[in-house]
Length: 362
Image (cartoon, rainbow, N blue to C red; front, side, top):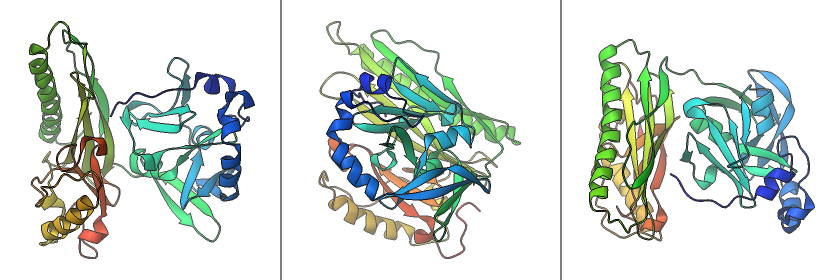
């Protein structure tokens, strides 16, 4: 989701963030966090990094139970294109729908993939003038997998074996009088089944058309004195393996008032026939999945400080998306929690929900 941020242009212009140079003392950021940085550094453990089996000269860091990978490893060893936008002060890795953007400021390293902002668990680190990102980000959103050798303290990274499908960003060719907009949605190509391909693309386009129609409706009620409305949309691919494609569409709008609103839509498709899969499809081998999920979700929601009440069980078969080995259930703002809580997400390993050996994608 889009959100405003305050960048530190002096920090970005004055330090070679990717080359290992130290931050300039005059930024205030370096001086103000020196003690904290030293304490954090003492708690970090160096980790060997392998790419396709070959050990790299560059090392990662084990911090707080997570492995962090230097951006320079992704550039020099993995081969991702790196660029820097001086106007927005953002570093970018890769391209297309998996383009990783890293906004570095005195507040930290804030990542987004294809314009989809990630939660705090995916934030990077700035250490001795170098940018590090958590391996979890590579695993969940960039199409990589790994094997961890605890004894040797080495992480061996390799590309995932993904479906043979092309995914591209498409811009909606539409302008709105009285509003600014940037509307991006996904379309797929290259599937063996043309009918399945059309079915998937139609469903994704239909979601965008609904959002555009709502914008038209909003603007009919806008007065000439109102500030310009804003509409933005993008998406992120969370799973593209085993004949299944899972995506999250994010549609944000501002129509006045204290804040805007962001709508999240998870879509999971079978590439074989184009069918949109529901929880009942993925969890078919567990007849009691609803009871199990409802019981656990009720406890978690009630423990949320922003809980508004009203949860009596899942009311949709589709408010989820898939990540590697993981099912993520989400709820929108105001659905059960206050706006400030944002979109609420809860992860469940398939191993928690299915009998041993069961395949959710068969």
